[in-house]
Amino acid sequence: MRFTVVWVPSAEAHLAHLWNQAPDRQAVTDSANRIDRELKEDADRKGVLWGPFLAFFDDPLSVLYVVDKGDCTVRVIQVRRN
Image 1 (tube, rainbow, N blue to C red):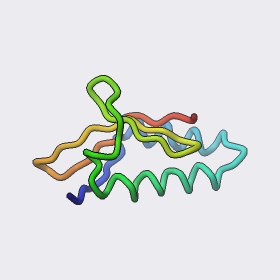
Image 2: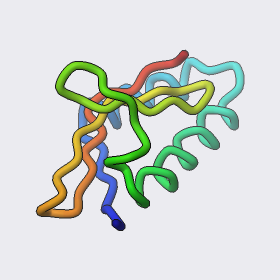
Image 3: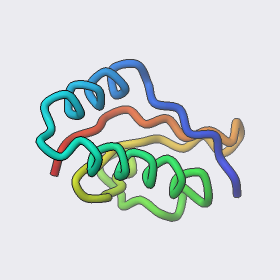
Image 4: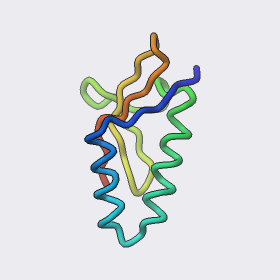
């Protein structure tokens, strides 16, 4: 199943903060792009359960997200640096 990936504003702002503080900005950019690409296809099967959310790891980042199958949407709700 194909999904639209949306980063909620707080996750997007935190990603920008992580990027600004990163000594390896290209690695952060590449990781965020891979996360977007990976979660577009079968996001409901790619993450690991993390409480009520799914977690996806792609060094140097990891994200928590929720899947809405009815709306074919993935909402990234949190991002952190591993």
